[in-house]
Length: 151
Image 1 (cartoon, one colour):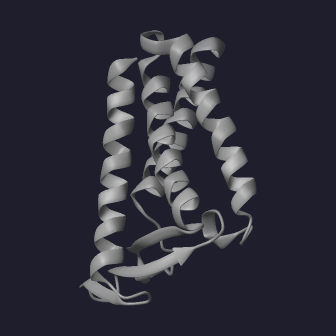
Image 2 (cartoon, rainbow, N blue to C red; image 1 turned 45 degrees about the vertical axis):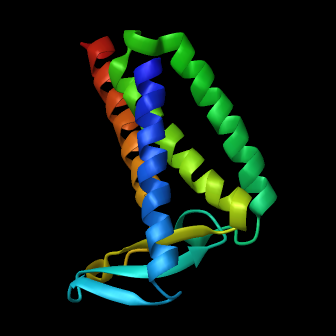
């Protein structure tokens, strides 16, 4: 359990440090092309959830995130090393959820800055990446476990 919490803390730290650098060194709306017309760093704030849905629902997100964090912690305690892929996926979601939770508690908005301009994808952050990868690994695990049971 300790290593999963340490990994979640690492995700939270990376997320918060990158957001702090964006807030400190970039003006809101400023965009720095790293690969012109493909990938930029763009200082953006999001008061909603993924893809900007549910704008200005801060307390809803705080309640939902609290429930999710508690649920993940209980799950990690229960499954621990028995299902390492699931535990790692939950750790990614936990770190990402707490990273964005900190923003919502502190300022009411989430700092986003990773901008794939090539495909006009919504601007996101390290916490969003961790959550997305964690959910993808959970879905992969479900698919692999489903195949085992039907074989």
